Each structure stands twice: as structure tokens, then as C-alpha cells.
Image: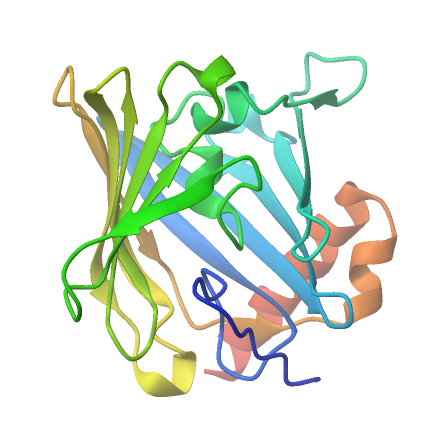
Amino acid sequence: MDDVRVAGPARANFRAGRLASYAFGVEAAIGNNPMRYLFARRFSALPERAVTAIFVIKPDVLFGTYVWMEEERDAGECRISTYLPTMRRPIQVVDRLAFDCLPLTDIGYVDLMAWPHPVLQLSGSGAPGTGTRVYRGPARLDALVVRECFVPGTGVVVDRVVEQRGEAIRRWEALELGGPAEDWLPRRVRVSRLDSGHRTDFTRSGPAVPLACEDFDDSPETLREAVENALAGAEARR
């Protein structure tokens, strides 16, 4: 696989070592109901692009749901679409809704993007060495602010708070990071709605596995099958 490195003030989120195309599984629960997701990402360079797909495997009623993100960093472009089995076709997620949550979960679209959403402008940081960045959205987004804390030296984001009209509404935290060989890919994260106190923990169910870059060129359903096969094959070899 190609080695894609990201320069600049905000490194790509959810990198996986030297892999340019990879996937991993994620487990969670809502009450006693198990949840399972598949995360797949492909990086390409010159220009820097990322394609990200999130597939819902459980609960069964949501099987077939997916989110598809295409980002081009230098051009400042981000296209997000989401699909539920009850829909005739995927719908585009406009930037106002890109700071909301995925269907039936507390995790936000912005939490799964490779880079900060292009409508956000870096407006400040904390004292040198504290590892904080503050991004502000345009006026049409009602005083939207995204605050990120990252690990100095690696740039890995470990805490993100989304504020609207001066009120913190949602938080994403990396509770446990992977090792340097995994590029510190989070093993466990927590998302919280700060107004209600509701929170959900998501746990990576295994290491990231390589995918063929061309797997992303077919339909989302075909990519999901490729991810399932790759994860099953990796599990069988363990």
C-alpha cells in the first residue's frame, strides 16, 4: 500500500500507520442493544483526497445504512451523503447538517471526517504547547465553534467539542489510543450530548486491515462486502 503523509496544522484523523486504504470494525451498545459499524477509508495524494465510508451492520433494522464522505483538502471540498434502507436514494448532507449526528447515534459527521470541515476557519489556539485549536463557522451556522485538543508532536485529536450560540452541545473523546505502529488510531472513543448527559462508548474491535484502493471505485454495497471479507480473513489468521 502507498504511504500517505499529511502535512499542515491539522493532520488527518483516523490514520492507520502506512496504509492508504484500510478498514476496521467498531462495536457499541444502546442500552442492551448491540451496535456494529464498519469504517473504511482511502487516502490519495496530489491532490490530497480522502474517501470515507461508514456502514451499519447492527442493529438489524438499520443494516444497509451507510454514510459516504469525499474530501479534497486543498480545494476545500467536502461531499457527504447518507442512505437508509427506507430511502429511494442517498441524500446529500448540507453543511448545516454536517455538524449534526449520524442516524440514530450521538457521533457527529465531523467526528468521522479526515480533516476539519472546509467551512470552518482556524481562529485561534491556546498557549504554546497546550495542543488546542479553535475553529469558527460562518454566520449562517449560528455562531458554530469547534474546539479541538490534540497531542503535541503527533497532532492526534483526543477531544472535540461542538458549540452553538455559545453553548457546548456535543463532545467526542478518544479514551484510548493505539500504539505508534497504528499511528495512534483510537481504540476507544466516547461521544456525549452535553445537554442531556447521554453518552455512548465505541470500541474498535480489531486492528485496521488493508484494502485494495480500487474497492472504493464500485458501489457502497460492494465495498461493504469487501470490508467484511477482509475483516473475516484477518480474524481467521489471528
